[in-house]
Structures are given as C-alpha cells and as structure tokens.
Length: 204
Image 1: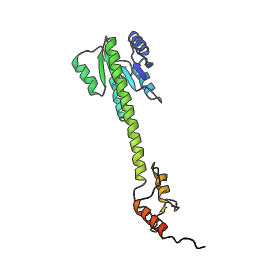
Image 2: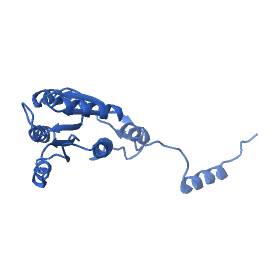
Image 3: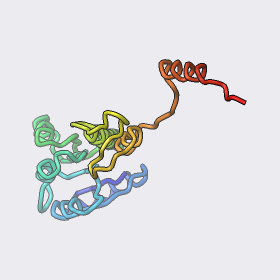
Image 4: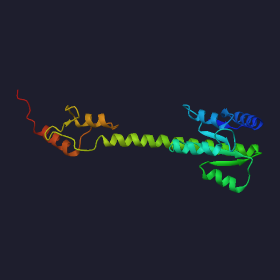
C-alpha cells in the first residue's frame, strides 16, 4: 500500500521513510504541506497518510479537513504526528477528522501497529466500496425489468425498446444475468402424454 509522509523535519522524515519501507510499504515523501497537497491531487495518490501537525505551507489538520471536504466518500486513513503529547491535542486531531494521533518521539513498535491498523482499515473500506458498486450495478439491472412490459397475449413474446418482439426467455436474458434451463411442468407433461395416447396409428 502507498503511504504519504508529510514531515518538514529531515531526520524524522528519513526515519519514518526507512521504517515504512522496511515494513513493506511504498513511501512517497513531501517536505511540507503544500507539496503533500499537490501529491494528493494527483491520480492514484496514497490513501494512507502520516502528516506532521505543524509544517510549512498547509498544516496536517488542514490537509485532513480539505480531504474530507473534497472527497467525503473516498477512504483515507490519516495519522497526525506531533511533539504535542497532551490529551487535548490528541482530541483536537481526532475532532478535525484525523483517524489517529501519535506523539514525538514515537516508538517504532507503536508506529508500526498504528500504520497496520490504517492499512487494514483502508483495505476493508476499499472492499466495502467495491461491494457497494456491485450492489448498485445489480439494482440497475433490476430496474431495467421494472415498469410496464408489453407482452403478446397469445404467443407471450415481449416487445423491447426497439419494438422488436422477442421470446420471454431471450428478453430476460438480455436484461439480467438469469440463465434458463428448459424442462416441462407436470400439467404440460400430462397434456403431451394424452396427446400421444390419442394419436391414431397410421393406416396401412
């Protein structure tokens, strides 16, 4: 998974980049908030973010607010890092929409665990979004079969939008993912059997 690190302190940034790369993440680094926002405006940008609270340009909390306002439906997981360690700072970071908060100097094991939570959360959100898209497509297909459908009262063919008359099974196949298997119901089977019994043998 891609991770964006936005940190203006060079030693901290190098430390974060080294650790995350070692843990198997694909890391993109921004030296300030403006550079971070530019990256987040590019196609296929990272969705897992580690943002310094105070840095030149756009600060970490402001980036989070912009993302929430721009794409409320897009799953992001943002971790705010800062030298502040008081409870009020953590509460403020979470209240503006950040998903997690970690103080400096950070513990390697703690950071790895928090980033792993972000990774799992983003994966679950992505899977959920895909399921929602699939459901939306399924509902669209169902709606195609709603409304008044013209059907012949004798042969049971259905008239489509182009005024072509089609067999019932062909129409349903064209407008859904249903697959037909042909058989014979008991009532029709009885009619066929009676017809066979009543057939007169050929003379001769």
